[in-house]
Image (cartoon, rainbow, N blue to C red):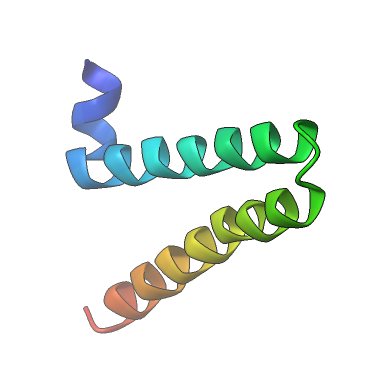
Length: 62
């Protein structure tokens, strides 16, 4: 629980969402829907990059 407090509830929920996206992408890929799995799988790094970018902009304004 200390990890969640240190990370913040919003960041923890985003990480859980990204983990769910990765699991769905793997499931799709392994079940034969290779193109759908790759498409969904690219969402996680894209969302993570956008979140990092927004945090950098927020920290530069301080």
